[in-house]
Image (cartoon, rainbow, N blue to C red; front, side, top):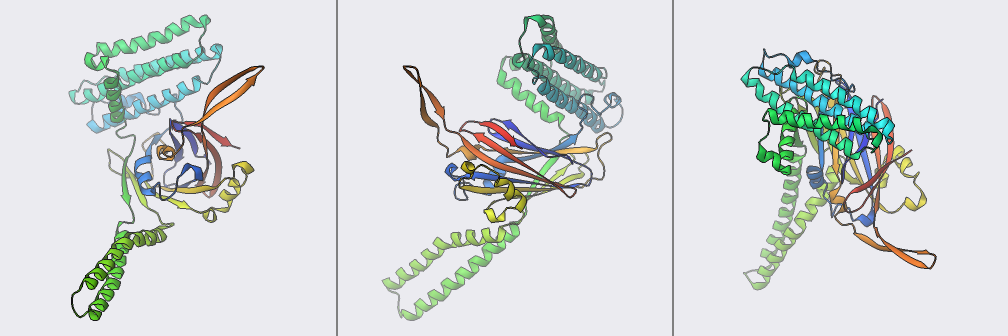
Length: 451
């Protein structure tokens, strides 16, 4: 089976990606082992707040043939027919091209020698030019469709330019490949001139880096229409929580009324003592009501699913995927045997006191089939670890070294290590992966897969 993949997303976030087939069921579990010294526990980090603010899910059509998008050019040329059909097929094509380019740029940057890097970069540029020519060959004449084309073309041209500028900036430098470098720069200049000639962006927007970047982010979201599914999140235990709160309130009120009636029978008239006693009773009720409700609710909710994500196609409104999600603090006795055994393989110095946080996601594909040419959908879950670093200390002082008769020092930072186990269940098979996430207050320093 295809394993779920965990990779870094931004400075303080990572993502888990996996693919699903029509009507397939999969389960993803993440077990976080958080060192106690990080200060993460139910009192400092509420699970529900963390879920809503720092865990995001996204699902979209997926194709592994990234060099040749599966949406054929004839779809782009269909100026006749429904407006939504043209927009959907156009977006599928542009989305696939942008994803292919991102993947190929990443692979090309792994080539560290100029002899390998520049031929691969030139080949990538030629493939990209063929794909954009295929798109621009069929510019629609219908005014209702031209805006969709211009938005997609504008974003794709800008994304191509930025991707190759990034490639040239981060790639190896060599005077022997000047011609190749000039060829790649010419591609970037050509795309920039193309947007200027078509008046896609105003000069005011071009002069402001923030404005042009934010505009392109908006255009990127527009081309995701029909490709990336719409998500609707529902809290599953609303009525149960109301019932628990109501029952606890009724029981406490009944107990308070018994005390009040007993007090009235013992005091024949209203006195300062009676008023003080009644005030004490109601004060205790308000003091312990919330604590008692929270305690009992946590016991009842333990192990129960908390949320449901429903993904629907933004054009047809058909349900594609259903997710049931859990997020809760657990103890070591709640760990499955296979997960606990993998945690125990850590070295002795790494077996420090830790708080365990468990995330679970059950995924069920409801669609019987996808759009023509697409056999899978991809599900990505993004985790932002910003709340984890809230209580971390900054620097840890200086490190002194002796070199002959000279003493030198350098500043060092304090780093923390999170052990994480990714458990993936699909078609009756279980896959376990253990990761070591090293982070400081500003970023994830490293994510290491422990074989």
